[in-house]
Length: 136
Image (cartoon, rainbow, N blue to C red):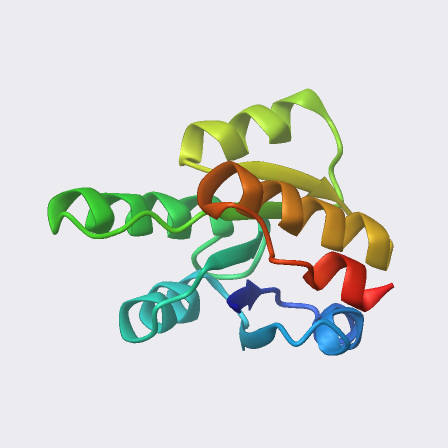
């Protein structure tokens, strides 16, 4: 499984990398929305973890751009899990309207992250094939 994690906070990128290290999930990182769209165009990802608020192109705009390319070029669907420190209905609705498939509030635990990824993958591709169990 290969994920793209889009997060402008280097400490959180390191934390996500450590949380997923034991699972065997490959993770690529991008610092902002522009880098995310570029990486998504170059590499096939099973899912994207997308911060909402970043300098430059934010996560909402990046996901809209990805969805537009998926539709316009008839590409496969990439599930997106939004990450945000704003755990309110407004941000959840904005993430949904932008084309997100899930929402995880920061800060989160390893179990919370793996559970959210597993739920996302079950919804779209049949689960993580035991990676959640292997990480515990």
